[in-house]
Length: 189
Image (cartoon, rainbow, N blue to C red):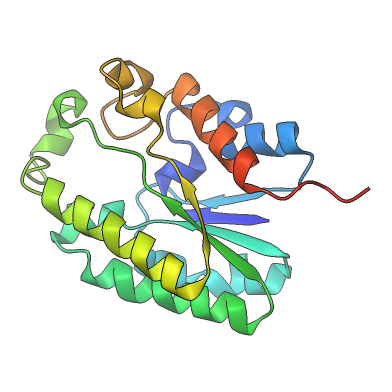
């Protein structure tokens, strides 16, 4: 399975071995390939979809993106279009798509240089609308989702599972890996 996304897929700020992609591969026995790019948008994901997904010929692809579209542009419209295009391209190529539902953002932990880029509190409704759209789109399309808004990331101690309010730390990645493992089918003997 190719995991295509942004810094949340890449594993910004944690060692590669502690990223959810690596942990889920180790625990599940499935081959997971990390194609996350720090700072990427769904437009960037779509631009490299042929090389990073179609050319690899995986059985599955897990798509997770849209946060940077919203942070940089203030809207989820491009993310909706691009994600839908990637799902349809995967299906047309016989690759089973899965969609990761973004983990929550803890705006109080975001460092000052990033706070100057956008008003994270004001964008909370855009993030919520995007998540709802993803759930509705996937349900209507028969696409499996992986819920990264886990109780351990939403609970009052949730911010302690982040490096900076946006990117999960090692414990956050462990929780994300558990969600992926629960969503993957068992390996055939």
